[in-house]
Length: 143
Image 1 (cartoon, rainbow, N blue to C red):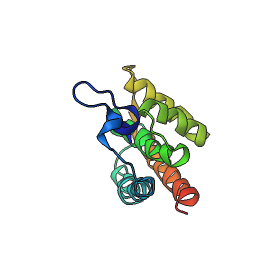
Image 2: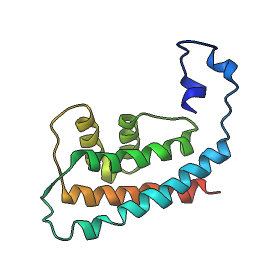
Image 3: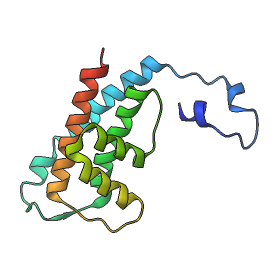
Image 4: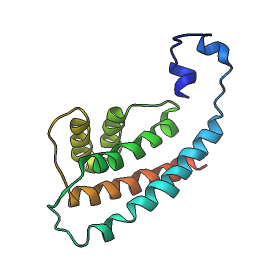
């Protein structure tokens, strides 16, 4: 979808002349399955993984941000038929689920190079946000 809609030719034919087709049904199914099979299964490991650490234990910011932003990025095309950046996906998550707005905005700031720190409690919250996004996607778009 990215190349088809936003591709910029550097050399060779125009993107429109490449005959790129996006099967929207296949894309929808891929995003739904990916949210359920990949993201939810990974998030399911967080409670056990964080059982031996205190909630304020500092965690890897990249990992927490990844779990906060990427599932929302898969949800967005289901709702809007288009793609979005990771940072815009954070804003989308905050709009869709206000209870994760602070975490989403901190992840956006971290991606922008600001010194954000994430804890084990944030990682658990990121896991909950994954489940909220995936469950919402399946409820609304599995059809």
